[in-house]
Amino acid sequence: MGDVTWPELPRAKTPTEFNVAGRRQLIGLTPAELAAWTAELGHPRFRARQIFRWLHAAGVKSFAEMTDLPAALRTQLAEVATPVTMEQETAQTAGVTRTAKYLYRLTADQEKVESVLMAHDYGWSACVSSQVGCRMGCAFCASTFGGLVRNLTAAEIVDQIIMMQHDMPADQRIGSVVIMGSGEPLENYENVVKSIRLMHEPDGLNIGYRHITVSTSGLPAAMRRLAGEDLPVTLALSLHAPNDELRSRLMPVNRVWPVVEVVAAARHYAEVTGRRVTIEYLLIAGLNDNPEQAVELGRLLSGLLVHINLIPLNPVAERPEFRRPSADRVRRFRDLLGGCGLTATIRREMGGDIDAACGQLRNRATRRGRRTGIANDGET
Ligand code: SAH
Image (tube, rainbow, N blue to C red):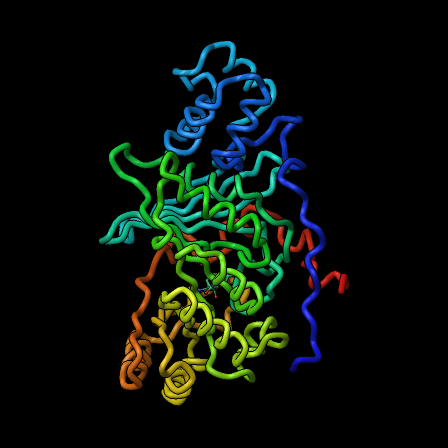
């Protein structure tokens, strides 16, 4: 360990390169950027606030609907900009778990991303993707089998929420967001951070920073950078194993940044922000769900400001050898952690009946294996 390096992501395209037919994707602009842009077009800055509200709070998808703007401005906007970054391709709902899973087609290049809307007792939460595909290569994850296609723009990350919000009854709103769909958010750092600031805007979705969670497979440098952003968001670390031997088998990223380094970065995050870090621990039958492993995990995390979220595996078709442990075994694991003085909860099963394990819907809709991951392309 330590002699392996993680390949750099090739330069991401800039958001303007995703503009459709030369039209600017306005959702990705902050209020200040939108005001500057509106001023450049020769309009008073207060128009920007109206436009921002229409785009982010009302979620309208045409300038014609922005009824408090002068007709001439609406026509001009339609010529140079677009309020659309994606179209809904399919939606599946599961009544029992009150979960809806959406597949969106991105207007810029017809790629597809998945997003999930979940009803909790505390309200609605949205799970959004940060990349098309993923290059992390985790053995159990359906999002990564086709490799990474590209980063999402900030506009495309936020628009997933706007689209889902628009699909809900008018008196209900999305109150929390988890960036836990396809992709590694910390590999798309700038766009993800910008999208977080956009979802927080009071004139827009108005989602509290404390209700936003960024989930990472464990990139220590980026975790530390996020700690310094002064954004009180929750960091979730996908740990999934208590030691390097097992974690490296499940998550190739661990061969570069081992357990001790990611746990140190999680500790740093908790210390700097004062916020409890979520440790995600996927339970796979016979692999990482033994009582000894619970105790090993307990020792590893003891004394840390963390909450452990136990996730019984969502089986994926491509990996039939990975199975979900019995409910008894999951509870046993939780209780052993409790015995170590740690708080652990079992994630309510969500959407297993609608392919809600990351990437499964897109895999079904896309021809698999069409692309290879950057990590597998030899671009090291
Ligand atoms: N790349 C980030 C965020 C996307 S994955 C990360 O790794 O955290 C979001 C979460 O879903 C991670 O904890 C991931 O390990 C988990 N996950 C992936 N495949 C899963 C499966 N088949 N069943 C249950 N959880 C899964």
